[in-house]
Each structure stands twice: as structure tokens, then as C-alpha cells.
Length: 415
Ligand code: FAD
Image 1 (tube, rainbow, N blue to C red):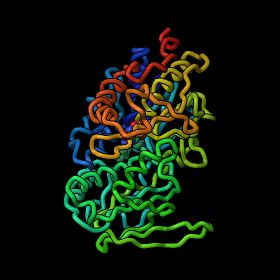
Image 2 (image 1 turned 90 degrees about the vertical axis):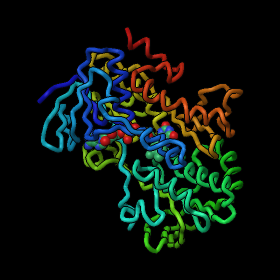
Image 3 (image 1 turned 135 degrees about the horizontal axis):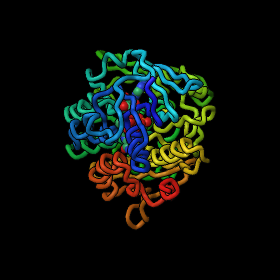
Image 4 (image 1 turned 90 degrees about the horizontal axis):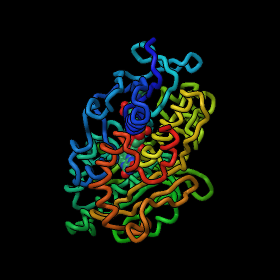
């Protein structure tokens, strides 16, 4: 089979950023990305598509424009791994060999885990910002609903961008407030868990908006079925004694965040842990059983917030450590668990959650500039105007100084 120094699975945020980082450090490395899609999506923009701020086209680029120069694109999908032989096999049977394998395939949006959901998506008022083709329907619904029940759902953790389900709620509510419909619309946020946001420091600021919009929070409500034409959602509710029961809600519109798991070709492989995530060390991103395999992004087992912000810090770590393995040297780069979730509490205002492992706050800015625990206009400016270019022109071009001053291992790897 064709042989590469570094073979990357997935041309999403993690795969492209890691390739850029590798080639910036060592341009002659033989790198290929295996990716079936023609297009790359900037998913963090979909929250703003659902609020009518970004156009869908703003979040999509041809794969050929996104891949860094010097990377070979293998257009296909990986089916199985043969880590003992250092080979991967594609769905069409083609085989590729590697010295180092880097995995960033993302995760599976499990639409079929909710009975009746797939058939009613994009119809009957049922929408989701988790899909490129549906995010515009969110904005359509938000503009057209004038009274009745608006449901927003959140499945069990972990999910990518844990704040996205409530971001959709706040931005919709803000529009209804501005157009004087808020009083007529009964907003309910049904979440499977029992906290509004996993890091307590951000919760007071979020609760202010929940109250301002008059939204009801229904904890331990897990969406299990939807009757689209009947406009009814069914939730499994866990009571204080641990017993479950079912409740129904009729709705005018419903924004769904689907349940999320590892991808089938990962969960069925020898590379997954019991929970179905790529089994890597949370600091070095090295696979726990195969030292020449690394994992990053949403599909990895690392217990950080699954975000592109996390990928921004993980990609150079994976790239540097991959080069160290190629050189037969010890791993030097370490990931601290950083992730970020810009919570859009209103159009023009964001609570900028930034934290690492264990919920440790890791603000990128001094408090006088942006205090992440309070809503701010500067954080909105960052999200709307600065983060997209940091993604396309920073992360994807290996310009890691844009990721902040903590990339100290850059010098070590450049030697
Ligand atoms: P992805 O970017 O999803 O890429 C995975 C790639 O792997 C895909 O291109 C896929 O086609 C490919 N692939 C899959 N299977 C195979 C296979 N068998 N073989 C080869 N390739 C395969 N992050 C933030 O930082 N801030 C935000 O505000 C934010 N908001 C979000 C809002 C929404 C609605 C969503 C959906 C996400 C949001 N995110 C946000 C999360 C962010 O988009 C992800 O964390 C990030 O894209 C993860 O990168 P990844 O490389 O792991 O996966």
C-alpha cells in the first residue's frame, strides 16, 4: 500500500489544523488526509446561521481551498484499522500505510436514537443548528412563530459545543423580545442533565437571561420521541428516586440537539475505549495501546469541552508529538484541556466560557478586556468577526501565535 509519514483521518477542524501545524514545522513530511466530503464546514458558525446573523455559505468552503499545500487528499472514508500492520482500509477496499496515524474523525450525531425525529427534521417546526441544511430553518421558524410553545432540547453529555442548545434558545428569545412576541411564546429548555452548564462560574450570568426571557428549565428531561405532524415531543423524565416516567409536550417549534456518540467505525475498532471514544492520553493525545497513533477533536476520549477552540490547542500538541515519534524521541507537547464556549445570550452579547480540565477557568484575556463570567459586547465581536479568520487563516495555516502565548513547545519542536 501507499505509505505516508503521517496519515490523518478526517479533514475537519482537527485534521486540517494538525496537518497545517505539521507541515509548518517540517515542510517535507509526507502527509495525507483521508476525507470523504467535498466540503469543509465551519460548524461554530451554525449558531449564528440559526439566528440570521451569518449566511450558510459563510460557513462552508471547498475542501481543496482548505487543505494546506503539500497535503495529499485521499477522497474516501476509512472503514477499518489494522494497527498491528500500521495500515488503514477504506470503504472501497484501498489500503494505506503510515508511520504515524492521527485521528480526528469527529463524532456521530445519532438522529435515529430519537424515535420519529429524522422524518420530521426541517418540517413541522422541528429544527436543529447541528446540521448545515437545517440551521437556516431555525431562523425561518424563529421569524414565523408568534405564539405558543417553543421547546429547546439537550441530550446527555458529552456533546460537541455543550452550550449550543441553549445558545439557540437565547438567540431565539432575544428575537422574540425585540419583536414584542416574547410574552406570547412559552419557552421551555428540556435537558437530560441536572445543571444548566457544567462549569458553575458561568451559571449566574446564564440564569439572568433564563429569567429575563421567562424560560422554564426542565432538568432530567431526555427527548426520546417526536410526533412531527402531531407537533408533540415525548420525554423520559428521571425523578428524584431514580424512577423514570414519560411526559408529553405539544410545541409550535422545537430546536433539537441530537444524542451524540463515537462513530461506528471507531466504536467497532480496537482503538476505542469502552465508551466508544478514541482511547488517548488526555495530556499527550497519544493512543493508550498504540504509541504511533494520536487522537484529537470531538472523537477523542479527552474529557475537555468538545469544541473547535479545544482543537486549536490540541492540533499543535498532536503535530509536535507525532514528529517526536517519527524521530524516535520522547513526547514533549502537553494539552491542558482548554476548551471554550461562547454563549450567545443575546444578539450582540456573549458569556465567554473558557476552561480546562476539571472546570478550571482559563481566560485568554485580562478581566478588564473581557470578563468571561459576564455578558459582553467585546466577546460577541470576537465570535462574529475574529474567530472565523482565526480558524481559516490561523489554525488552518499553522499560525499558532494566534492561539495564544502558551505554545511554548513550539521552539522545542522547531529545533
Ligand atoms: P469535525 O470538524 O466534525 O470533522 C470530522 C471530519 O472527519 C469530517 O469532515 C468528516 O467527514 C470526517 N470523517 C468522518 N468519518 C470519516 C471516515 N470514516 N473516514 C474519513 N473521514 C471521516 N466549537 C467552538 O469552538 N465554538 C463554538 O461556538 C462551537 N459551536 C458549535 C455549534 C454547533 C451547532 C456545532 C455542531 C458545533 C460547534 N462547535 C463549536 C464544535 C466544533 O465544530 C467541533 O468541536 C469541531 O469541528 C471538532 O473538530 P473535529 O476535527 O473533531 O471534527
